[in-house]
Image (cartoon, rainbow, N blue to C red; front, side, top):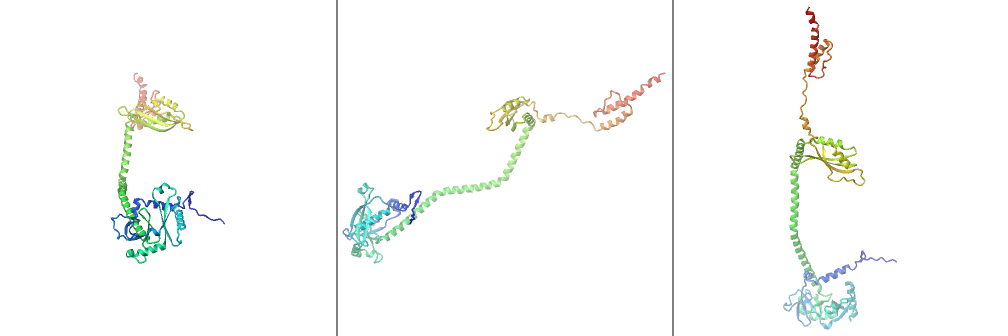
Length: 434
């Protein structure tokens, strides 16, 4: 039958001992001064085998200046004649494996039944343990629950009044040999541990509150600046909304002013823009594309017109030569070389030249020339009246001028009428003389 194994692995890493590693790290951090301050040790009065009482802070005795008898908790120190001590060396193991190995070693070394055996263990300090860090030494203390009960019955009258109930147990301590004590589990240590846990939670709460206040003090200026920026942005949007009509009017005014300025410049230009554009358009071949046309003038008083064109042509050099041969275009040059993009069939060019003001005069100059005077309206009836007279008089002389213009029509008609009269009077002169 195939067994299904559930392994806590992530990317090939075994995570089964992650919790134990964190617990071990936290136990090591508990010895730091700051963390130890967060978990304050309770005050305990320890009753020694000789009948004296010593004041302790946690599992360590306080200096003699501190008087005993006022602590909320009580502990009883076991005499050395009922405690078995043994030193055990173990390799570096995880916390769970180490505890299991120590429990097995305690059961193996204990001369008491398994149900009656109580023991405690602590890591031995000093240079001997530091020298061999690969296999630290552990000090183990083993005793019997019955022996502990017998010792408690002997010292009960001395501390029974300080316990809450008659059946309550004090803490049972064993000297470690370095001045501190180690507590046997399963007696009255739970009350002290609960009080220490409450004190730790209170201290952690106070620390979190202080850090929150410090964080608020640190963030307050930044928050104020952000709120001010948000308020300023909102007001700026309101001002923009209020000023939008004025901005549109200003934009229209600037546009109209620019158009007016262009109109003034065009009217006062020394050459006609339309004539120059027409000349350039006629000069360009059919296969040439003109993209931009710009006519500028230099500063007064010369105001020399200058044209800049850009476009595409098969041969920009030939186009420059063709423009240079035209009348009115001079100083033809290319401010930048012609470029033929990859895959294109035409060259992109930029050509500049100066316009001759004598060739391209503005249209206003031609408009100022005197126009011919129109003929009077009465000339038409006069010409019509002279036509019957000319027909009545017979044939007109060969040298008569036809009525081609409105101005000479009356004169021609009058001369035509006078000529037959003179012709008729000429043959009558000889007949009168005989």
